[in-house]
Image (cartoon, rainbow, N blue to C red; front, side, top):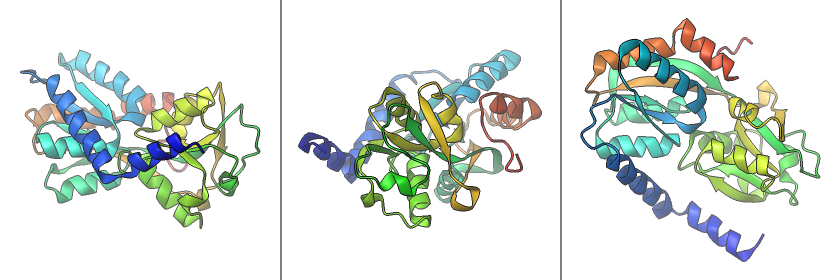
Length: 266
């Protein structure tokens, strides 16, 4: 690994870097707020395709515009804490809702599970090495990408997944810590990474230039994707209606269309 790339990795791992990302993203988000009183949803970046479709359809039905802020789940939680604004929170893992509940940010009994994120190994078709399992990622000749656990749900879940399978992150040649799962998928598709651990639905978006390696259920750790109404909501009734819509039969249909896992019995 080059000295410059190593320096970037060291920088990304530092606490002040994560804090700077959160603070900067809050500033940019507030620039777009102005006096707009539209309902705001904070949504994990990996959930964007079905949420975009459902937010548009819901808006057309109710004559409103749902403003959606897409980013890593941890980054979004930081924005909610710092701004004290917003109506809905939909992170990539239930852990972040629990953190938000502990901080007193979630309206009581206003949380529902939507779908599941199943970790998979996304491999570039240009990768010259055989990758069939998590253990294969320890090959020092591979350029591996992981999500930043201080920024996104897939990063935090990946650390737990590796630990559960007896793999130390430091045993991997990690050249990228990405702020979102979408960034990882893009880099694998472009060939700048040999492999990365991403969500199953995200992997499907890059299937033309990548190969997806499934992780056996017994060795995997699956994330539950929830949605919750925030205590700060200025539109609580509308927010609750959106939760019901996303978790309805129509919502499930849209998530399945975008290759999301909606039942662990599948």
